[in-house]
Structures are given as C-alpha cells and as structure tokens.
Amino acid sequence: MEESDNPYTPLLQAIQSPFLSKPLSVAVKSVLAGINIANIVLGSVYINGCPGQRLIPYYLIVLGVGSLLLLSLTCLPCGDGRDPPRTTLGLLCAQGALALFLFAFFIAGNVWIYSLYSEPWDSAGDPKWCNRILYLYAFWITTFFHMCFLLIIIAFLCLFICLCVLKSSLSSRSQTD
Image 1 (cartoon, rainbow, N blue to C red):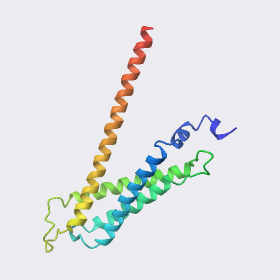
Image 2: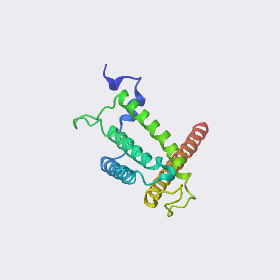
Image 3: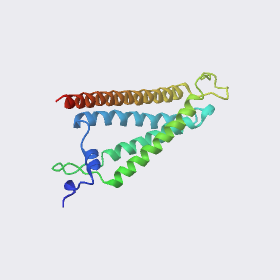
Image 4: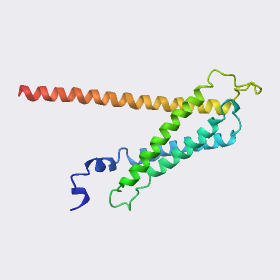
C-alpha cells in the first residue's frame, strides 16, 4: 500500500501541497531572508549600543538566526524535481518547535523593546539610553510583524465568515430543493 493511498495521512498530504506559486514563494523567502540578515547585522554592530535594555541586540540576533533556520527548514524538502517533495513528520515537528520558540522569544522581545518606548534616546548619559538606529529598527520591525499578524488574522476571519455564509446558503438551498 503506497503512502498516498493511506487514509490516515490526509493532513500531512495537505500540508505538503504548495500554498504559493514557486516564484512568489522564492520572492517572499528572499525578502524574509534579507530582513533576518539585517536583524543579525544590526544586532551585532550595536551589541553594546543599548545599556538601557541590553537584551535588544541579542533579541535581534537570536530572532534573525532562528528565523533563517526556520526559513531554511521550509526549503529542505527539495526533491529531485520529478515527484512532489515529501515532508517528514520529524521535519514538521522541528519546524513547529522552532516556530514556538520564536513566538515566545518574540513576546519577550516585545517587552524589552516597548518598555523603552517613551525614554530619551539621544542623551548617552541616561541609564535608559539606547542607540537611536538600533532601537528604532527593533521597534519598527517588531511593529511591522504585529501588523502582518493582524492582517493574517483579519484574512482568516474574512475567509471563515465567507465559508460560514457559503455553508448556510448551500444548506438553505438544499432544504428548499
């Protein structure tokens, strides 16, 4: 019995099917890789540039490295080009564990970044001082991710509402027939 005929793996088969077209997937992954490389570079350059919250540069570095690792794990099931690539359960578990770690670390980074929001950045003698470039980059990249999460949630809610309306219209149409 082939794996594709196995009735117990429909979810795994649905996960393995491509969600985006290949050129769009490459473009999105390239942009994400660029953002994560910028995270690593800025965190490394300004490693001691934020005594007010010394964990912000480390947050950028760990978030960048972890996200690049997760991005490379999504590129792993390449295949030979003839058959659709198969994703193993172990790889999916590794991706999930890494995504969960990055989510928890993202929440911690929010606390570190937004705790300095109203503090002065230009006076280097202040104990809450943080390099302006480092802080504003970390602030805006975190805020950008919040906006992306919000857009994804709104899109899923719209899809859910459309599916509920479609289901109710189909069920009412079947009852009248």
